[in-house]
Amino acid sequence: MIAKTESINFTANALAYCERGGEVLYQNQCFGNAKDLAAQFKERHAYSQSTKPTYHAKIRIAPEDKGKLNTQEWIDIANKFTEQMGLDKNPYSVFIHEEGSDKEHIHLVGSRLLENNLVASDSYTHFKCMDFCREIEAEYNLRKVRRKLEAFVAGVEFESSDKRLISLRRKVDNAIDFSDSMDDFIFHLKNNGVKTIKSRGISFVMDGIKVKGSKLGREYSLKNIEKRINLGIEINCQTEQVSEVIIEKPITENNHFVSDDHIPIHFFKKAGQEDEREDGLKKKSWHSKKGMGR
Figure (cartoon, rainbow, N blue to C red):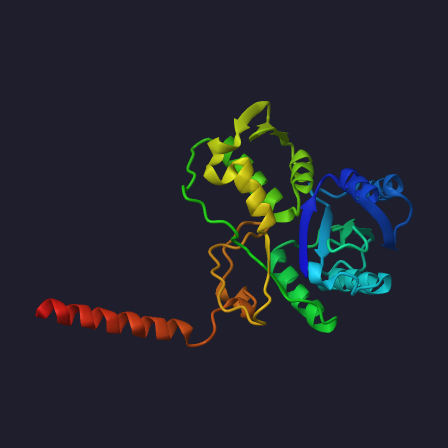
């Protein structure tokens, strides 16, 4: 199972997108179609100073789990997700897409605004989603799916002093991370102020400036963007343990570095692996020196 969530400011568009692609499964403290829901959320957020008072989440199963979950189980999973995120008391609507297919998934669109008129924190959501998926996979006997945090390693590191290009690159990366298809990718960029022009290659228009994907770096060509989207998840068929995940700098709301004390335990290396590796390097270094002495 894969779960992704993002804080958004395009509430009406997200609701229309979810309604257009499927049907409503469940609504909590809200009711009606996409237009009605958008009006209700707008009224709720009228006095909030948050620029992103709404969240949009997507939860999908592995293709091998096609048909394993019925409607009530999907509703239960959605409710457990909001509870884990601390949003179960807030209004939210659940939609199902691709029902009955191997791409079956649900969308949740809800309010982040709490009773004290502050928004719920969206820090560490990458880790919270992964923990949630592991729990649901075990509970419903689903195939364990490990989502890659870094699915693609670029051959050339992009460096630029142009803040507009840095901002554009960040938006493209976020859209890739949240998307399962090119349609998803284009939709999310559009709602973040970026127009996508796709032909034989790909270009982006932001703030009236057109930029070719190749100008952002090799990994932003059309072919490599499609590859990054397709490789965003990996179905782990052989093992039930995540042996190693290298975490450089998790993204948080304030972009602060996350200390080891706050990272879920299963993201660390298995005890003893690093020591064994260091011992091997020391032995190799000793033999090298011995050879040089000859």
